[in-house]
Length: 447
Ligand SMILES: Cc1ncc(COP(=O)(O)O)c(C=O)c1O
Image: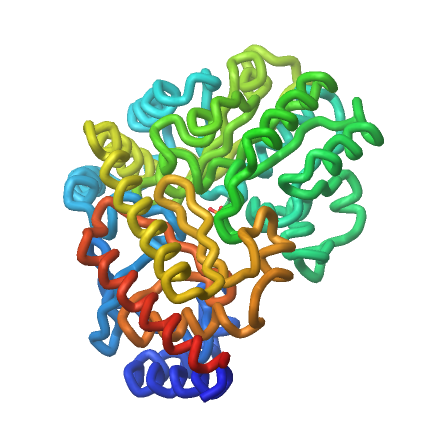
C-alpha cells in the first residue's frame, strides 16, 4: 500500500469513528468559515468537536478519547481543567466576571510574573498574544523614535498586520487584505542565520526600532535559536540601539519560570507573554523595564511621547486569578523537573525509534516542546522543515495515524507537541509505541 492509499484508509477509519463530529461539521461550515473558529484547528477531513477535557485527555462528541499534545494551543501546562485553578475561578465568578474597574488580581499577577523574569519591572495585560505583540511594537517605536521592525522568517507572532509576513517559507504577505503599506517597515531576516541578520543591520542600522523573535520558533515546528545566533542578535541590537523583543507567548513559563531568557542566559528589552499566564483563559502581556513601560503612564509622560495600550477586557479578573493560581502551581518544587524530564524522555524515545528502524526521524526539542520531523537532517529553520522532508504527505499521514489511535496534536502538516504536567509515563509510552508502529507501517508503504 502506498502512502496515498494508507492516508485514504486512515481518513475513512477516522470518518467511521466520528459520525457526530461530521454532522456538526456539516452544519458548522455553513455558519463558521471552514466549520471552525480558527483555521489552525481544522484538519482533514474535518475536525472532531470536543465535549469535555480533563488532565491530558479530551473527549469528542462521539465519545472518542484522545491523549492531547496540543493542550489548548500550549496554554494548558497544568493539563485540562486543573482543579485548583477551577476552584479559584469559581469562587471569583460568584462576585462578577468583569468589573471594568481596577482590582488587586492584576497587580498580584503582575508581581508574580515580574518576580520570575529579572529583565522586567512593569507589565500590561492584553487579551491575546497578537494584541500584546502589536502593543510591544508600538512601544518599541515610541521609545526609540524609529520605524523599522525586524522579524524572522518562520516566526509566528499572531495576525497583526505588521508582523503577519514571512511566516511560511518563501511567502511574504501572510493574508489577503494586507496592504503593502502596512508592512513597509517590516524587514525579514533568516532565522539561525547570522549573516542574514548582520546584513539587515548593515543596511537599516539606526532605523531599526526593534527585532522581534521567538527564541524557539513554535509554529515553525519547535526550532530553537542556536546560542550563537541569539547572542549575536542581542549584540547587534545593543550596538545599534534597537530593542530586542522576545515573543515568549509559547516559551514564557514553559521552559521554566524564567522562560527563554533564563534558558539562553540572554536579556530581552521587551518580553511578550500569552497562553500559560492566563491559566486557560484569554490573555497576553507585554513587559519591560520601568523606563520603557512608563511611556504608557499618562501621569508621567507628555502627550507626544505616550504610547497607547488598552482594551475592554484587558486585565479581566478571571484571567488574572487563573494565571496567578497557575504560576503558584508552577512554583512548586519539582514541577519543571518532572515536565521536562518526561518530555525529554519522549524526545529520546522517538529518536531511538528512528535509529533502530533506520528511518529519518529528526526531533527538535526544548523543555516540554517537541517537534517531529521526517527530514533528511535536523531542520534549523522553517525552510528546512519543508525542503528536507522525505515525502510531502508524511506528516499528514502521521497525524491521521495517531488520531485514529487516540492521540492528537497539531498541526497536521507540521507535527509538534506541547506536553503538560498531567501527562504520564504511560501516555508517553503509548505515544512511543504508536510512533514505532507508524514508522514500521510507513516504511512498508515507502519501499
Ligand atoms: C509565539 C506566538 N506569538 C504570538 C501568538 C499569538 O497569540 P494569540 O493566538 O493569543 O493571539 C502565538 C499563538 O500561537 C504564538 O505562538
